[in-house]
Image (cartoon, rainbow, N blue to C red; front, side, top):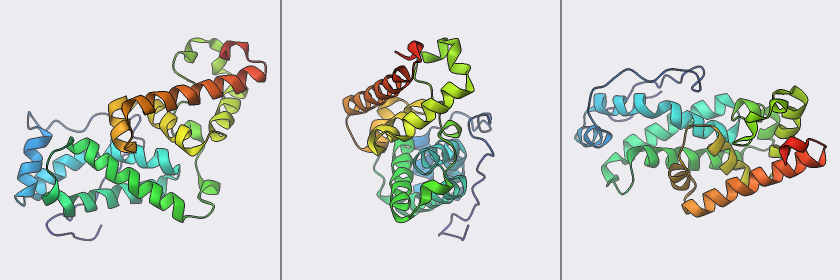
Length: 213
């Protein structure tokens, strides 16, 4: 990554953020304290913010783009933009929500600008567990054929429903965080996720998977 003001570190995106352990302990320093230090020009403080949130930022970009290389670039771009704009950050939301929102906007902008990006996209199952919450208790959902149908059902959703579902099922974000990422009310997030799951279950039931009802 090219140097940007005092921030010239290269982000170390984990090879698999869903299985990588938590970043090294950085004591009891809060994000708010690190932001204040970084705003005073301390690049090490910003490095620590990156270490805390890079996996979540990458995960959000991957949910939007489903192309690992593009998601890595968006994650790095998001932190560079955050560093540049840090002086304007006033704490109206948490730093995590703020950086996730930046990453999501950059990912959606990139997605819109890449014709045929979906042809390079990784399977939805690599981004989020395709089974809806509560459905994993059904042994049948371990069946590869059923999982394939679930993935195709998610792919067939509208972007708004699919994005909300993938973020919710990534296991990374609370509904409140998803609302911040998508810039919509929490109630709308809950409705979109519920509606997405209903449509997936409906499609699976139509294919004869009674446990999906």
